[in-house]
Amino acid sequence: MLHGTVIRALSGFYDVVTEEGIRRCRARGVFRKRGITVLVGDAVAVEPIGGAEGVVVEVLPRKSALVRPPVANVDLALLVFSLKTPLFHHGLLDRALVTAQAGGIEPLIVVTKCDLGTEAEIAAATAPYRQAGYETLAVSSLTGMGVDQVRVAMEGRVSVFVGPSGAGKSSLGNALAPALGLKMGDVSAKLGRGRHTTRHVELFQLGERTFVVDAPGFSQLELNIPSSSLRKYFPDFERLAEGCAYRGCLHIDETECAVQRAVAEGALSSDRYASYRALYEEIRHKEETRY
Ligand SMILES: Nc1nc2c(ncn2[C@@H]2O[C@H](COP(=O)(O)OP(=O)(O)O)[C@@H](O)[C@H]2O)c(=O)[nH]1
Ligand SMILES: [Mg+2]
Ligand SMILES: [Zn+2]
Image 1 (tube, rainbow, N blue to C red):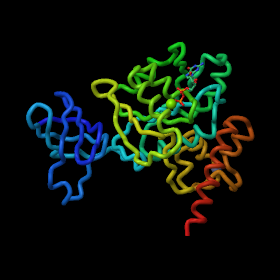
Image 2: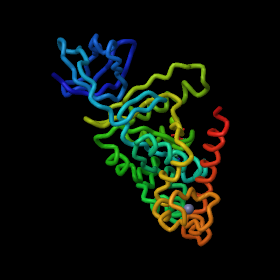
Image 3: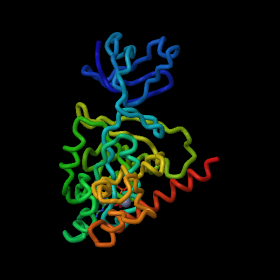
């Protein structure tokens, strides 16, 4: 019996990276009857057949599963945002932080193109996030600054690159491994504008147990949480919330709110608070128009 990770699903076959190389596998016949699905990213047990084939006989419990793209056990979301060109986008980063955490995926903030800015500009962009407790790396794919730190963070995990177009995702992929950069580059070039409706998901193997999700057009995770839970995903707010007068304070209209007080006093980033309010309103609107 071998153990491995499903890196590719093709009509009825699964490519599984095992201790003994890649095997093309079928799923056990009984899976269908039992409603067991096999996803890219699944950790599986394989009964080998010959030198290169096998049968997936067991799917190990999933740590997490994304719906779009359909992939299991993603550990780490690399939230890639450029310091400049395009200008650092707080709002989108704050949204990505919420969606990653809500999906059970650890976020890692990667600020790219740091060669284009000064130390002070880098510090200004990253400070609110470091203060909130998020791991935040300053990177340049051009000079190589910080790239090894990204590599170390990815080791032994399944990562996904999230971030706006032009932020430097493909360039970072290329700095990590030219073959990865080529894949990521190809994808955006070929699938820039819809048409291809099938969303093919694969894992790219970067190291023995290190993988990157490769899914065309995948730049955002889905935001699917109730408005009342949003506050949980702002750890910097949660720490202050003990000082709010109401236990379930949403930090919106409440009086004696420690979060709003901290913003007024300059102790909490007003950008972060603006993001929170915008996301809160967006979710409320969805909730109100649902029925
Ligand atoms: N100066 C500088 N430019 C970069 C860096 N990383 C990417 N770029 C440039 O930014 C543009 C977009 O990069 P790309 O990797 O294609 O972004 P993606 O759309 O997120 O994949 C390209 O012109 C890159 O050459 C960097 O670290 N420094
Ligand atoms: Mg790209
Ligand atoms: Zn409050």
